[in-house]
Amino acid sequence: DTGVSQNPRHKITKRGQNVTFRCDPISEHNRLYWYRQTLGQGPEFLTYFQNEAQLEKSRLLSDRFSAERPKGSFSTLEIQRTEQGDSAMYLCASSPTGGRTSRDTQYFGPGTRLTVL
Amino acid sequence: RKEVEQDPGPFNVPEGATVAFNCTYSNSASQSFFWYRQDCRKEPKLLMSVYSSGNEDGRFTAQLNRASQYISLLIRDSKLSDSATYLCVVNRGTGGRRALTFGSGTRLQVQP
Image (spheres, each protein chain N blue to C red):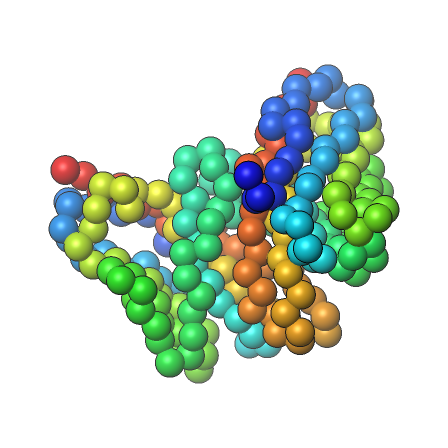
C-alpha cells in the first residue's frame, strides 16, 4: 500500500497523559499536513511541513501540541497533558511539490482516533 | 462566521435523482477550490477540483462563481454508493500557505 499511513489507528488515554501519533506520507511527497476533525465538522488545519521545515501553524496548535518531521519523511504529532477536548480524529495528509500552484492535491491517511477519558 | 459555509443536510434522495449542493466562502483571496467526499469514519478523499470555467467528471459537475464566492456540486443519476458527506474545500494559497479550509460538510443519503 503506497498511501499515507498513520499509527496508531486508535488511542485511548487518560486526561493528563502524553500521546504521540505517527504519519508516514506517500513516498516522495515533500509536503505534509496535520488536521483535526471532530464529530459533525470538517477537518481543521493544525500545521504544515515542507520537507523538514514547519512552515505554518494554526492558532489551534496550542503549546501542548508539537509536531516534528526530522528527516523530511515521517512526522510525529505529540500532545502533552491531554484534555478531554483533545478527543478527535487526527488526520495526516501529504502532497507533492507542484511549483507555485496551490492546487496540489492532498492525500489523506486513515487518521488516528484519540479518546481522552 | 465560518470561512466556508455549507448546508449540513441531510439530503435524502431516491436513486436516480439529481441533487445539488452549494457552498459559500468568505475569503476573496482563495485561490483553489475542491470537493472532497468522506464516508462514515473514513478519511476525506478528493472528488474533484473546481475550475472557474466549471468542470464535469461523469455524473458530477462542479461550478465556481468567484464574484459571488459560491461553489456548487451537481450529482446526476444518484447511486446508493454516492451516500456520503461532501466537503467543500478552499485553499488560499497565498504567501506560501498550503492549508485547506473545509466546510462542515453536507450529508447525502441515497435511498433505494
